[in-house]
Every structure is written in C-alpha cells, then in structure tokens.
View 1: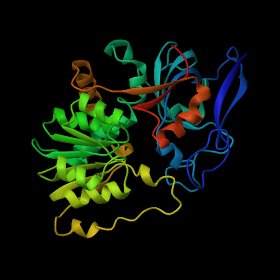
View 2: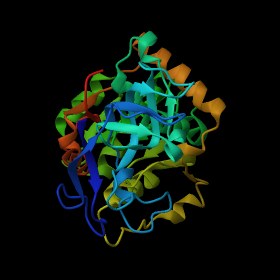
View 3: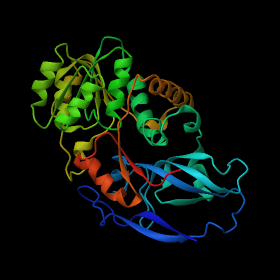
View 4: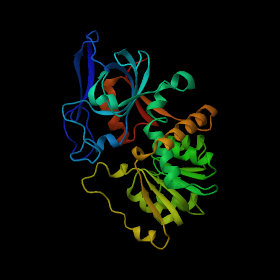
Length: 346
C-alpha cells in the first residue's frame, strides 16, 4: 500500500486564473500496488507533467474540449513508467506518454477509458533526449508549433515571422523552426532576461513588450513588414501585428493568453485591414493533426534537437505538490520556458 498524491480539481474558475488551494488541491489516497490486476490493466508511476495555459480554460464551466471533473484529478500530457502490467501490449519498464487525459497523480491504474489515454513511448531510451522533452517539445507544445507554422503559416524562405510569447513552450520552438526554414524571426517576451534568451537562440530581433510600445518596436524590427504572425497572446499585440502585416500575410491564431483571465475580452479594432491586404487569420487545433503529419513532426524535431539546430528551455518544478502553483506561474509570467512538473525519477 502506498500513498498516492493527486492534483484534485475542486472548484470551477469563473474569473481570473486558477488559485492554488482554491481551484486545485493536492490530496493523498491509498493505492494497493500488490493487488491483482484485471485483464489489460497496468500501473504507471508518473514521472513528469506538462503544465499548459489551456488547462485553465478546461477549468471553466462549459468549455468545448471537455471540462475537468470536479472532485477528480486534473488531466493533461506527461510521461510515466510502467511498474506493473497485466496487459499483453504493455511491459514493465515501458515508458508511456499521456495524450492529454492522463490524471495528474503519482500513480495511475490504467483501465477502462484510460486505456485510450496513453501510448508506449520508449524513444528516450534510444534518442538520448530527456524524458521531460516528451512532455513538451516532443509532445503537444512541439506539435502545436510545427503544425501551426507549417500548415497555417506556410513559410517561405526570406519572409518575416513575428512570434509573441516567444520564450514560452510554443513560441521558442516556432521561432527556431522559422530560422531553420530560412525566415527572418522577431519575438516579444515579458522580461529583459527572456529577450536576451531569444537572441541567444538565434532570433534576429526581440523586445520586451512590457517596457516598450509594441507598434513602435514592430516598425523598427520589421522594416519590410510581417508575413507570418504566430499569435500566442491576442489583444493589443494582435492588433499591432495586423497593422504591420503585409499583403497576403498569414496570422496564425494559436492562443489568447492575455485574454484568459478577463470576464470581458478585449476587442480587435482593425480587422477591416484583413480585407484590402487579403490577410488570412487562421485558427488551428493540434489535436486535428493527421497521423502522417504527427509522425513527420516527431522525426523532424527529434533530428533537429539531436543536431543542435533547435534548443529547448524547460522550467522544472520539483514535486507534485507544486503543480497548482506551477499553473498559476504560467499565467503570471514567472516561468521561463516550458513549464514542467517533475513528479519522480524513473
């Protein structure tokens, strides 16, 4: 018998951001690891969780992608190791990747509907890449960057790409992918330290949006206009990017983090510019990526990481107890890079 800590969703978020202790609480239950398993069941020791902005959206009433269930663990992406199995397709010692609905707890007994929530992912054993990468750059955030840039951005060598929230889980990848593909890349972030990091990983220009006028900086850093804007924040940044966009520009709508905590969201007041400039505003959801594109992403980005063509910064919180605070940190801009919670060593 072991104590199994779980991150429990206890209250809907109706305004603002999820507050540790109010909306998410860490509780412990008992789990008998020695009890016999039914056919196809297995037990995972969870290793890392991905902490992502969309999680707060799933904590609001009536979200289209399916709310977290009150009184149950929050769910998301992560990696774990199988410690016991009565499933012919799953062996003890296999690494498994949760695909968006894995419970955030120390141990998970996989059965019933949860059998569809995981897939075997032993890649870290052969690629030499950290297990945490498979909850970030080689999981949903990485696929989001690749799918959005390639299918919606339609990049062409020599074009100018502007990325907001560029030091975050998705933004840092979009910018570096753009550089690999021959684009001029500009990014914005919320601190001078983050701006310095963007320049370190190859961005052609970067600015602190909190310490400068966004429109003025885009005028300075994008003298030939913007061909692709990868939008992670919405609001006034989206408005400024539309104003600076070229004819036939593509605005890739990935996230609206500046709007998530607002009861009334800000409007965009210059959408009419999309008509004479023939600007395309393109939303997307990486869960609709085809298996073929997903496999292409995994092969391509693994190779780029191994060759050092792209780097990936992670902000790792140690211990499951820090999960609620780690989510709030993402919204308050205290994290630097992809936010991960390390639950246990393998």
